[in-house]
Image 1 (cartoon, rainbow, N blue to C red):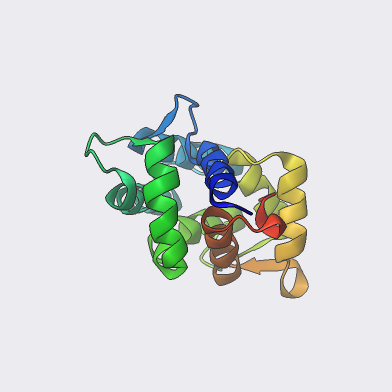
Image 2 (image 1 turned 90 degrees about the vertical axis):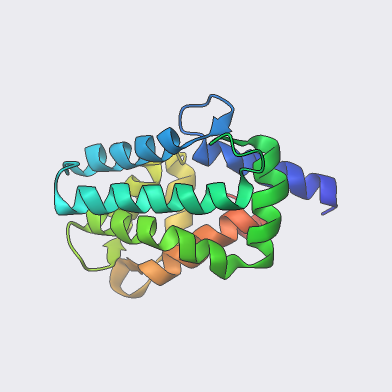
Length: 175
């Protein structure tokens, strides 16, 4: 895959973050994602799980903005995402896992209904679908992530999410 094709592939993944489809990623997109997850699983924003999810969404936004918001306008354009975020995250996928961990941990707790740090297949498909992943792609992704006894742990999910956003590997393009 040449560099231009790689950049186009990564830029297309930008749309997962751009929850409202306005052409840039902002703090509101992360709040929207958190609200969608809470609604899907019947949790409230004021609950401990809801507060943890909003905290995780804010941490993910701050981490991504710190990497990609080159002009400091509190918005990440498709170009900023493709050129700044992806290069830095590709060079250090563990950095992405570090900034995504609070959100993923809280999302798994909301999906699982507790502090288990693992979710079942059905809950994970629901979680991905609530975040805007097409249902068929979410199901296919979960089948590749499935762990012991149908449970998908936080670390496995983090690794898959990091790979999705930092590589153009065709095996992870459907997440």
